[in-house]
Amino acid sequence: MIHVGVDLHQRFCYVTVMDARGKILQQRTVSNEAAELRRWARSLPEPAQVVMEACSFWPAFQKNLSGEVSKLVLVHPARVRAIAEAGLKNDRVDSEMLAHLSRCHLLPEAWMADEATQQARQRVRLRVALGQQRARAKNLLQSVLHQEGRLKPVSDVFGKKGQAWLRELELTAAGREAVDSYGELIAHYDRLIDERQQKLEQAAEQSAEARWLATIPGIGGYLAMVIVAEIGDIRRFANKKALANYAGLVPRVRESAGKRHDGSLTRQGSKLLRWAMIQAAHGATRGSPAIRAWYQARRQRKRAQVARVALARKLLTCVWALLRHGVGFEESVFATR
Image (cartoon, rainbow, N blue to C red; front, side):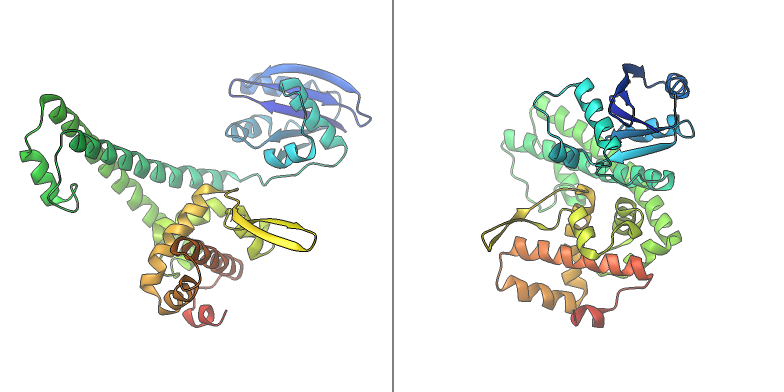
């Protein structure tokens, strides 16, 4: 078998083809067009293992080469750099390094999400992105009010009373244009978000995994779909610690000469899964006496933010157990662990 390292870009990729002894057979640029990629793959002299780093372009690359090569391997970029950091970095060096790691069986493999998981992630990430854009538009509108020296008389300027106040507010010509434009933009985002939210809630009703997670206080249909999509196949996490590490909800550990220091969160892995669990932690303390007692016990010893993150990690261990065993949340079990 030959080994192929691929440095992926949006329009093209740079490939290094290497035999089992480390001899370079080919180095070249290949267009990412489906026909060109397949033509190149069919020209390889032997069955090939093709290695690429995880990036936003890999799903399309995988589809184009599916069935054309013996094996496609996705690797973790940060772990690749930790194994083989090079002083010189360019397309040729990167692809050559991947080929070498492949033939030496040193690849830090990453999970390749299946088509269904990729589609689910696109849907939940669209909903999250729309919410972020709406929040940005609201912030921009309020910044205009600050520049105009207007103090809002209501707590929520985007509620009914706030909207009525905005319509009657005296502003400069430029200020009125900005407020009206941002208002229209926010209303447009509201409609899109309502549509996405409704579809995700309907999908959650049809998903057994989402229904299990929705039994956890603080997690509704929307958050359940985010969590299910970001986790993918729960079987790839051997234990709850592995899932917490994937979410970046574990501290950095520095240990030397018998002394251990726990630092800040690693914040590696899925940002969206970490966000979802923090959101769930905010609502869980209001809906469950056992969870509220657990949180308050930590709050007495730690700052509120630290205790909230600890609760998010605790809830994620519940997520792991529920998905692994196919059961709903039980408050009595949470209280005893």
